[in-house]
Image (cartoon, rainbow, N blue to C red; front, side):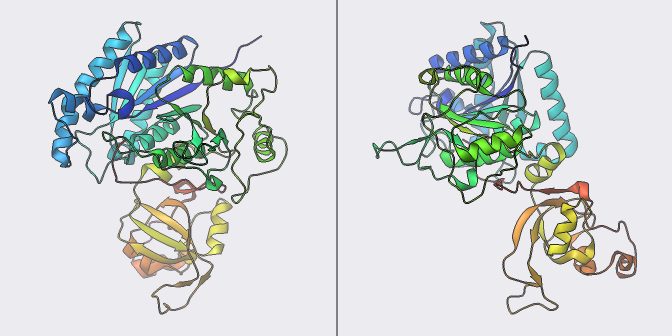
Length: 458
């Protein structure tokens, strides 16, 4: 009988998992356990990627700098110093177990360019096929605030989506999410399974360390991104990296062949599991309570000893994941403006038609052809601007992103008109569509992910 299939596993490690917060010395015992865990997963047939922070932290230790500087040029210099020493440390530890590794440094601009995005994707797939463990980090020596991912949690989610990973582990300083802060509330309850992130009620007050700038909130954002791409996301304690192997084995043993979703004794989670398996028609409701089941998880086939499974929070993947080009449009690109469309145009797009100029109500921002813009739906359009200057009434709801065939100035001239009038209005007609359907990508209907830009890295 065939054993469980191999999985793609991405492990994200923050700076606090790599170096001591005060002395900046590498946490060799923790790093050694991470290496042993990654190699053990490889021997089990899984494909492993590590998203590693820590370059600046290692640079601080090398240069005897006590505190993380605020000036971007100094941070970039420390990252350049620390990155080579960090990779040397990883290579030395993995070499003891004869495991080859590779370094991949990315910036937001690398992801924004479609060719470079595909090149990074192909490189990662080739390395995994060769049995190599890629170690991914943001290229802090080049990244500035305009092109930073925001944090390595986000980078790990994009990496997981890029390689179609099955599991993303976000390592942190707590075992899992809680409904209250467990440090100040003894009655805080763990949240072990989350089906609908939009309905999640959890304590996210845990901030990042003094070396990194991430926290629990950035991990929630990363979970939104990853689960929207069909990646099961796990939050667990970084000081016990061996838990990763136990959790992977548990998920393998308790999932159905067609889905990575574990059956849980909770009505909404069970309905999602049946939907993923092709049976049933229930879907989660955004206003419903998040699935939080501290001790009710059961393996459908083998009876796993629940007490042997490390405490963790698992975010279940979307039943209708957004992948490849559509994920890249949503989360790989920085939007340069906004298109406001009416309900008719929205329905046509959902029916796989392109976006015609007659359905465009208004345009905002300045952008060129083939640049990404937000796509917002309005309820009722006006014939003339209202007192607020808007061409619509009520609230506009952002539903996705698209790449446009025309610039903002051109769309402002052709909006509301028939496609046959484009040539007369512009003097040329490059396309009958403002955006081709294959260049339009919608957020997941259940829980819309957010893709942050700017900020700092964990």
